[in-house]
Image: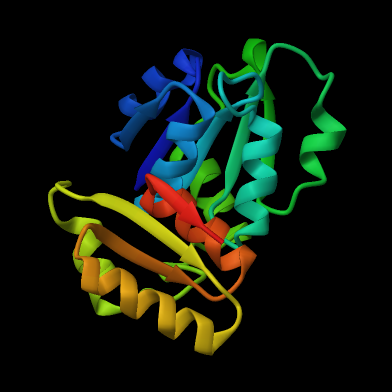
Length: 190
């Protein structure tokens, strides 16, 4: 079982490691969002207050992207409990003072069962895009978002001829957002 810990979740990291679970650490919301989308983790442990993208907005983006991963929030106070528990993928809200003993394999398994993780991305990438995603960065990554198929075909054909960019294409704004978070483009053309 793999857990992604996002933020100052040091209260729980020792407990998770002591249970023999793999843990990946990130310390800000943007890096945490990328880790969730790129890894096939079983659970994400998210701090409410994060630099660059707070935990509440991170959870809303994950829900918007239709990526099914259970999220357990940790916080100093109950201030955000109701707001956070209303978000689809959130399965638990734990105060820092209550963390001791909360992260057992049974709890993690129960949370996984409530929101089953999907190994499929909620959007399609063609073979060339997968190649561009996993090749060493040499050229700039360009994300082209266009809902008109004829225009998309014309512009992508011209961009491929230039051979200056690793090209990613999205058919609409939501798919563009999903791909932008995943591929981290240098330039977005819409």
